[in-house]
Length: 211
Image 1 (cartoon, rainbow, N blue to C red):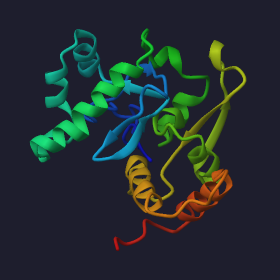
Image 2 (cartoon, rainbow, N blue to C red; image 1 turned 90 degrees about the vertical axis):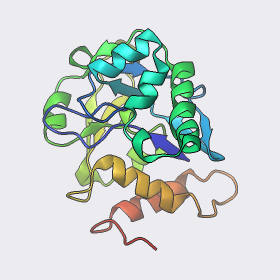
Image 3 (tube, rainbow, N blue to C red; image 1 turned 135 degrees about the vertical axis):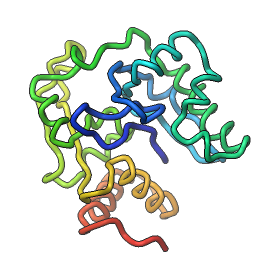
Image 4 (cartoon, one colour; image 1 turned 90 degrees about the horizontal axis):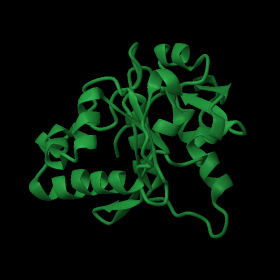
């Protein structure tokens, strides 16, 4: 199952989850069940939270969906059908799932998170909707902080960075899902199997060559 999230962080923080052109500063909380959608028959889910840049936030709040479609990071390289499947369907799911009341990143991050983001980490909740991925991420590239947000006090705040220098963390996740999706999942609870497979894949010295 694929995910949508943010680009590799830089000194300004993770990039906008929609256009990837500017830092994402407005954090939206999403209902994971309502964010599920299909792209060419495959199920996708938005991350638990995502951050939009100032421009995309203005367009989102204004309901300017066609302007958002035009601003999407990959619209220019897609056919009309690809835009419907890969841009409009995720946008419709984003609108369904949005819980409202976006929060500026400066008021959203727990203490210590901004420093880690500046070092190349990104909030796991903005990268993937899967709880298994942060659990299986190599420890050397994972950081955990106490979550100080009122509705999250029982959960740790996890940040991840790419295990492969030069490969943005979002690209790592894309490669991971492309590798994992065709595999035959065991019957029953596949959580332990999936964690083991993810950890093994991400513990390699670099991204494997394309088949």
